[in-house]
Image 1 (tube, one colour):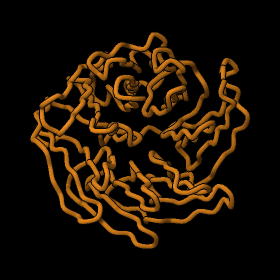
Image 2: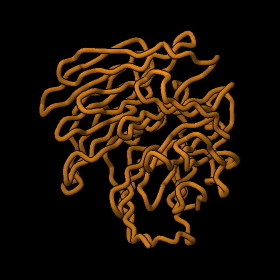
Image 3: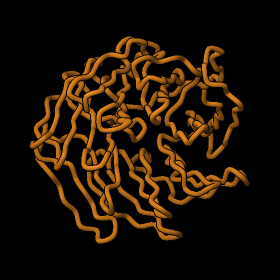
Length: 330
């Protein structure tokens, strides 16, 4: 969704109530402070790739601290999602023009361009699945073959007035096996979708117990497995409001319950594994050790995107930095 840039200063304070021991916090300076990243992924053992708002797609070496610009910035929007498949990188521009790029070594190629706002990309085998905002209340889910370049679209799927998807951190959609999950918000809905073949057979559509307003609703989904998952969001214009910012499911998305203990405010990204979940937003990071049923405060600050690797959490801030938080999981 277009109107989703909130800039606040990061305050690096962590909670002493955190039941997992924080061993260290390092700061990675991967780009100019005028820019930020809503998308990051592991590229190699020592390298991370960041999709940024004003400085393109950046490769950062954790060992040497050096950076390399893989794709220059574009005037039409920001890089809001990034996928690494072996040594290939796929990334999308969200803005007035939706663009998909492929980076293979030194070669950068454009796979797709359209006058639409792309919110999320996921990779299924050799095909990218694109989620973009509806046009005239109709949604088409599009796929692009990453090698042969051919293009398909499924739909139209009917939507309601004002329904849209949030490109807050490239986590508004997820793929597990043959299930494609995505969430939408807006003034008239807060909705979860599970699609099998992008048709209506075996699909699930559920209304979520999250706020309905312009720029509000579900922003990010993380399904732990096909039955259990968590959705976070809220209202980004009210970042400190913690009412109805997270919910969870244990039946594959048929029903969603509000988290008994909510995160500390609006949250735009959730990630995790079978043991722990983390969610971040413009006023901090929270964690859950029971699948999103209860959340505990971890750290204050303005955070955009998360990456969890074993005992290390990476969290990008709004001024060209990424925190590397090493923990002793208990």
